[in-house]
Length: 529
Image (cartoon, rainbow, N blue to C red):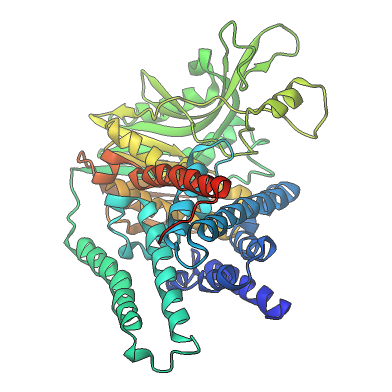
């Protein structure tokens, strides 16, 4: 095969999965996207060819991060593409060693699931491109995520690709002149429609039969539309409060229970130890004093004094003028007339909010090197802390946290009957980024069967019901507020109770397969198929 044909096949796989990706992607293409790459692995594999596939996929779906940091985006795309390529190389190596490259396609499903689980839990987490997310724009196809989470979608995509590839491989063999006469090809012709359409039919039945549970709660979500580059950090606290409260006030009723403003809406250098002394907090309390049946949920950038002996905590930051340390947080606050409840973001965005606490990075942090910006990380909560008001518990997902299905389920385990997403997607401009982020919230609603109220600084804000339908949404880049009624729910889905069990099983299987591969590599034993 000519080199340009090989490169073309690798590029085709990358293009197909990128075109399938939300928000206006053609999700059915995901079922064939990896067929060219599987052919490359079988016939002419090289590390570089598979890197082309994953580089194209990453670049075409997450290029919008460029708007926040050009150099960081190049590094992120290159590095994540490398991680994905290493996973595919491991699949190729194990398949070759264990099965002489003749069988073992199932290894790809196991290895990819294990990698996606890693990307949900390690310090360089980036689950944005976990394959199950591809169906977020087609949420009526995956109502069974309430049992499997997005891992079920990953299995669906890869299993279908493998079956289609094996059918095509069988069909085009030189000695196979009449496909219909081959029992194996007939088997694949039966299996492929089954694996594609049976989950789809089940989901459609679930969607149309599901009845929302719980009582009604009226919520107002605020979209202040603060430009993060020119306004968010320069306007006065009074101006920022006016941006939020002026659009919320006309929508308030005696039935309103929650008003929700976005992530980092308050930038007043607030210290937790005296949080109730600041103008923004006083103004919010003045506002809700007129509506005593209401609480206000809002995002705040906060600081807090660190206890003595925390010098070695990677998140600790030293004061310049005294030998003391403090923490910085990305905080969600629930404010009433007489109380303030806080939750600090736990799933931090790599690079922007967190650095891995690896030894080499600790050395950089402790050095006097000028790297052109702050080298450090935010302090985070150790639990998925719910915030309570009027017999309701809410899980407030701060921006990036809404991509982590298992972590979101922990809020529900801790009693959340509603989910709020507060985010500041304005950093990405009018790009696919904020749209993809909105779509992923639909999957969290399905997994947990919790209604979602979403407040985004510049959009898109809105309301999502327990089936994953967006029942109302704002336009991008406008100052506005929306009022709607959502259903609460106190029932736990199978996925909430058991979490990412499919991912965890794949990790154990991966460890076993790696051990078997090493044993055969060292001892040269024959693997009997």
